[in-house]
Length: 123
Length: 480
Image (cartoon, rainbow over all chains, first blue to last red; front, top):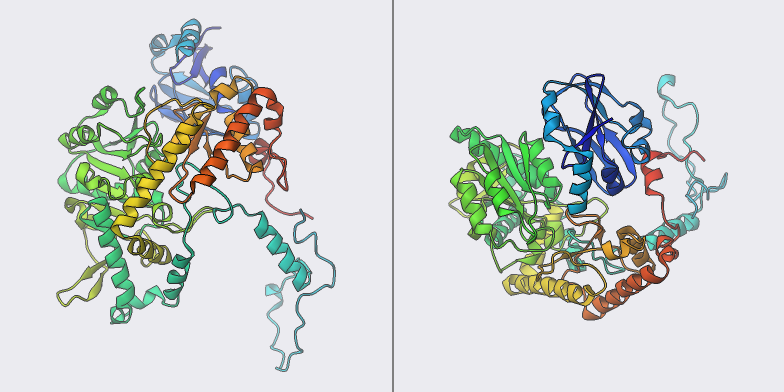
C-alpha cells in the first residue's frame, strides 16, 4: 500500500477511495510519549494543510495538518483512551482520521515513501 | 512522604474549644444538612506545623537555589518589595469606583499612573494599561486592540504572522482573537527567515508578533526592516516583552518600529512567580491605538488629581476586575524606583554578561546550534549526549541532584533536545561556576555511564516520575 507524506510528517494512504491520515514513525518518535489527541468532529470540512488535529506529548503540543482536502468521515476513537497507539504503531493502529477527498490529485503533490526517507536524511 | 490524611489519628485534635455560652441556634432544614461529618484529618497542632514546615522544605525556589529556567527570568525578588506591597494591602479597590471615591485613594491611583508612565518610558510607548493580569492576558489585550484599530480603519485583516521560535502563547492569543496564524520558519542565522517572511506578508496580515531577543536569546538584526515591511501593509508590530530583561535602557521597542508591547512584571520587574502567579502583563501602545486601551484608565486632570475613566465607546472594554493585580504593580513600581535608570541598565547588562559567560564556559560540553553572542539566554542541544542514549530530560533531572533547578528543556521547538538556560543578573560568578561544574559532570557521565543519568534524580523524596503515566492515568483524588 502506498503512503504519501507531507513535509510536516503526516502521512496519507488511500483505502477504498478514502484517505486515511496519520503521523509518521519519525514524528511519533520525535514527539515522545503521546498523552492526548484532540481529533476533529466527524463531518468537518478541511482544506489541504489546514490544522486538523492536535497531539500532546510529554514534550510538546503539536498541530497536525491535513495532507488532503475533503470531509472527515471517521476519527480513530480508540486514541481517546489509548493515545499510546500512535507511539506503538503510527502507520496502522495509530491512524487519526479518514477523509472523503474532494481532490485526490492533491496526493500527487506529496512525497512518496522513498522521497520522504530522503527528506528525513537531509533535515 | 505521608499525606496529612495518612497522619490523621482518630480523636486527635489541634484545638480545645470552650463550651458554648450562647443558646443553640435552631437547626437548618434536614435537606440542607450533610449525612455524615466531613472527612477531615485529625491531627495535633504540632504535627500539623511539622507537616507543612516539612512540605515547605521540599519546595524548590529561587530563595533556596539557582533557577536558570530559560524564558522565565527567575531572578531573585528582593524581600523589601514584599514589605512595600504590604503597605498597600489594606485598601479595597472598590473605593476608587464609589462616588467621590477617587479622593480617598489618590496615592494608589497615582502609583498606577506613575508606573504606567515609567513603563511607557522604558519601552518607548505613548500610553500603557496596567490591567492585564499576566503575559498571555496582555497578548490577548494587545491583539484585541490591534483588531479594533483595523476595524475602525475598515481594514479587512485575517492573519497574524509569528516566528516558529515564538512563545506558544503568541499564536494562541492571536487565534483567540479570531485570527488565522502564519508561521515563518527560522533561518540558519537563528532568526525569522527574511525571504519567507517577505513571502508571508500581504494585505491580509493584521500584525507581526515578535519576541526580541527571541527564544534563542538572539537580537534580530533585521528588526527595522521587518517593521518597515509590516507597516507597508498596515500590519502592526507586536512586541512580546517576555525577554525585556535583556534590553532595559539599551533599546526601546517603540524606537525600532513596534506599535504594541506587553511586559511581564513578574519576570523583569521584581515580582515573584512560579507556581502559577500572580502575574501582571501591562500593555503599552503607540498613540494611534490609545483610544482602544482597556478600561478603567487612570488619567490626570488639570488640577493634577487622578481620575478613573470608566467609559469610552472605542475601548475594547474591561479585561480584568478592578485594576488588575495591584500588588504586583506595587512591587514593580518599587523595583523600578529603587534601581533607577542606571540600575535597570546594569541589571540588563549583568543578565546578558552572565548568559554569555555560561554559554562560553559550557559550549565545549554541549552542542550550541546557534553559536552567536547571545542576550540574556541561550539554547544548547543535547544531541551529542542523545547519540549515547542520554536526553535533555536526563540532564535536567541530574541537575536536581546537584541542587540546581533544571533549565527549560524541549523548548524552543526549533532546537532538537533543547536545553535553554537563563541565569539572570541575580547570580554571582561563584554560583555560575558551580553550575558549570555540574553541567560538565553531566556531560562526562553521559559518556561513561548513561544509565546513571537516566536514573536521576536520586536525592529527592520521590525519584523519576513517570510523566506519561501521570498524564494518561490521572488520579487527582485521595481515596485513602
